[in-house]
Length: 235
Image 1 (cartoon, rainbow, N blue to C red):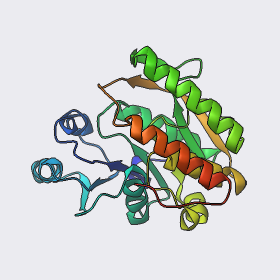
Image 2: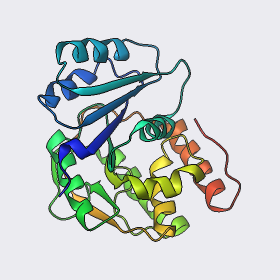
Image 3: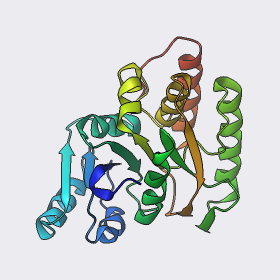
């Protein structure tokens, strides 16, 4: 079983100053490695740096970019910076409790990847999204199944963990930089013959999603382009 000191968690943190405190408080005496990727224009990076100064025992790195990377672009930069055998990522808003990430890393004894799912039996949704968001999620999942043949019930849950060796095989081919990043990553891993497990997860809705209507349309267009060979980098 992977120990925390073999694991890196990447946290894309675009303008998360109002929500990042919850996750930072959850870190406690975390023994793994943390990479926060900040590409916004608010006080997120400053808050993370102050927290790191107050907790010198944490292995925490804050990467800052002066331009928007996109959700996927932020995860990608963090993954490239990681040098542990196991690498995962989670949302900055604390919707996934930190202990749930260890459940995912533990599955890597027999798999190349483990992804959290809010739609499997055994998942615990402490606070659910509204009905419209849940309907959008099911519609999106149907689209992903049709276009990419992915069997997963929940590709967009922001809690995932992988073997670094598997990531190294597919990251050079990645073109997505937006919210569709997760789908492309799972698709490329599946095509590379990697074994990915979907794991019930404890999840707490922490307010409105960052994915707006324009983002949803952009994801749809980007996925169609990706699937039919007309890929372009999306923001």
